[in-house]
Length: 281
Image (cartoon, rainbow, N blue to C red):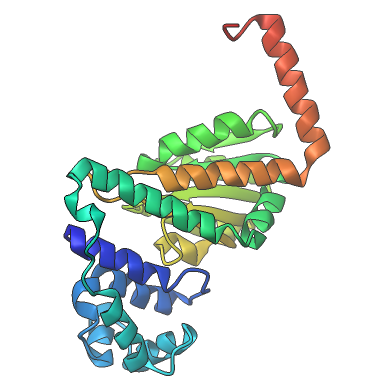
């Protein structure tokens, strides 16, 4: 998808924000985002063929978004695909990438006007003993970042940032030890091993919270709570500013959900850090 197509895709993605979609509907949504440049000029039957679903599914998808049918949705898609003249046209590629991240954060800010999902996720995670945090491949550093800070307020955080045959063993061990919920960070290109781990975690009885790039991510199908945060795609490698911000928002909500024990742990850490002279004054 070229730069103009990315902008249109981002606008299309906004149509699905806050809407709980079925797996079939997520396939349609993903198809419309991926083919944003031409989807607005296709019939319902052509979209269905492109997404690998039935034509009635496309109609039901449009109705689920609040439109009378697919033609009404298609008119909106065409409007979203209009020209985008603005100051961004004068920016170089690096500036445009950073500007797009600022737009992502702006949408995340608006999304956080309603905190129901964030608070529900926080309640699940702060009470889980232990707390597994899954992040493979590109999500590994973000899992480690979250785990580092979460370990200051939670008694037993287990970062799962490597795959292989032992990954499910570690999920089993955490579950046996009493874990009731897990956090999964699943970012494009959506490692199969991450998605398989989510399926297995649900089968084990975990409540699964996911931070992923959109509400129509493949990870969303296997989760109890999805916290979407867009990923920047303007550079050779993705920018994860949005998911990192969402991770820290979630951690703040976890602290707010159980403030007294959190404060005690923070004070104990500060006392230990001072005694051991860990940080430069």
